[in-house]
Image 1 (tube, rainbow, N blue to C red):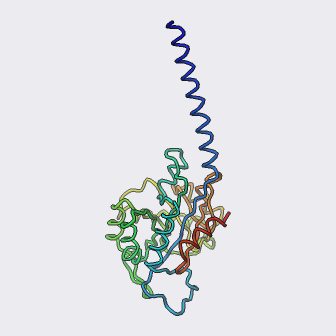
Image 2 (cartoon, helix red, strand yellow):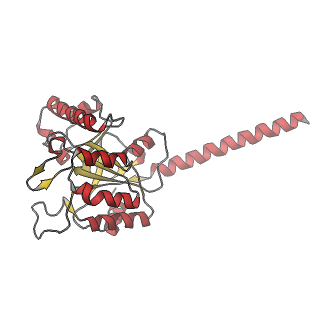
Image 3 (tube, helix red, strand yellow):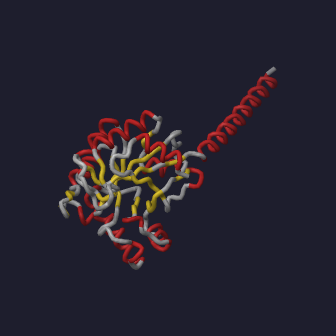
Length: 264
């Protein structure tokens, strides 16, 4: 009787293992088709000007950003961080069914003044890529973040601060060694003011890169590199060639969702 009981237990265990393997395979197959959109914003203004030299591609309004967040949440998207994306890539955590990331380039003070309260209101995560030479400065009428604002946002657990370079130059036109040193120095400055970084992500100014720069930064401690416009897929996700979707002025949440669905 005991022998039959043990055999039954073993059979049940084997069945459970097989079911778990099949389920895991199904989950992996399903996960392989997951898109990973990363939205790109820059500066935020309360009044949209009549004319803009950049064709309204690098400004937005706080109201529009909040509308974007609400629409995406209502459509079932889960806002994740770069760290969570990296952990999912490493197999430490599972991606949500519809992940999405928010990023902001250059480090404008408006990210703190207008966007940070919205992030807190909806408990949405975001990454800010700062140009370290511009921290605590006002240039051409544009005010940039100070370290105090960066510390406050980072300590909230909602905002990650990463490098967008030290000088904001075209990296495809400089010697690789100079580029490497620029990025390393930018992270030294960031870590001096914000503490050590277990994850280092770099967003190329103007999306300007070369294969040589990608290799040099990878060999010098940069874990993830963001460089171009487009869509990421988890099935072939490459941490060294991450793409984003630029959000021009007052693009609606519905339009963003349509863009995600249409972009391969």
